[in-house]
View 1: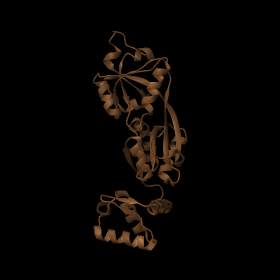
View 2: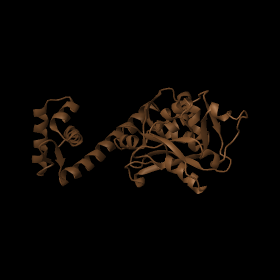
View 3: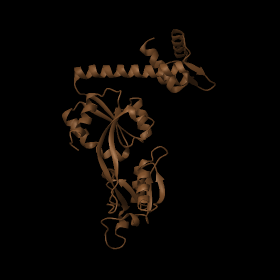
Length: 301
């Protein structure tokens, strides 16, 4: 069995169909079916159960997939290490970031570009679940995210560099702040409970929503939530349009310099959102990724 056959096998395991796997591999279906048959004959084990619509891995297939993924990842990392030893720090650093952490990226990228001009960057924005999947598949090397990282990856498989915590503030339509004729400079929780609120929440990422709700309840209050939304951008647009207010970590707001919004501290509450950089423990980091992490470890934030 060779590396090419292992890649064929992993494509079939991913797509669960020979036809789709062949398309993914840019090859014809019959040769791919033949390669799978040869693998099963060589191993003396059935790798897939053939269903009407899709293939399902057998116990032997699951074991081979785990070992094959690990083997190919080690090969990629070895090639990367040898290449970097010869060429120095270059190549593309792939980073995943939740949109609420995007404001953290410009400074370290600016520093790396100045020190290592041959580095390029690929940045993917997404929710925790998507970024977790991409990290496991090694489509990205690092994730910048709110903590905890709400994904299917076991925490024991991740290394995390915590970053300074981010205080929550309220975000209002600008017109609401001056409605009484006197501009507000802060707001209390009992006052905030009277306003229609928008919160950030998806089916899988609920931490920020729960923090806000729990802080209201700690004050014996219930928030007047009129909209749960999965997009920071949509929430900020709704606030700018005068639909409602929100409670967000302060660093988010530097990415949305709308003139139609106003930011107020909460005078009787101080709760924070945790942020971190995450990567797979079993993945050898590239030099460019390590330099990105070093920027934060050196306290240059």
